Length: 98
Image (cartoon, rainbow, N blue to C red; front, top):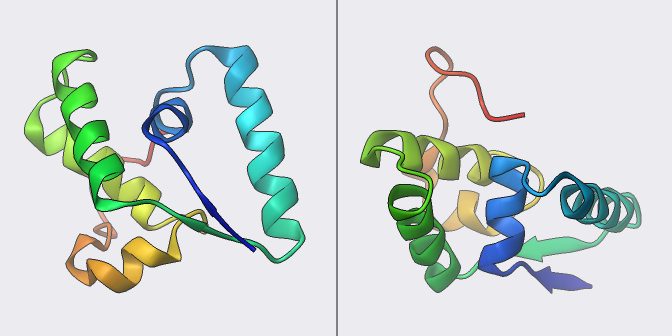
């Protein structure tokens, strides 16, 4: 099965807020991945998350893109890796968000 992630879930995974909801999301994602399921993040969700990272969390354009690259490089969204291969995270530089 393929699950679509919405903007709030992507932001929770990136920002770790609020902790109790992040734990629920992480538990679900890990369980679904262990069962062999896939995840999908739409273009619209990526756009919305980029906007939220900049406007709500005050991240620069570069940091917002870097954070979204962390999701693209994770097992959560192979779709992004196929769609935007140039989004591959650099091997040096900033660490991915925890």
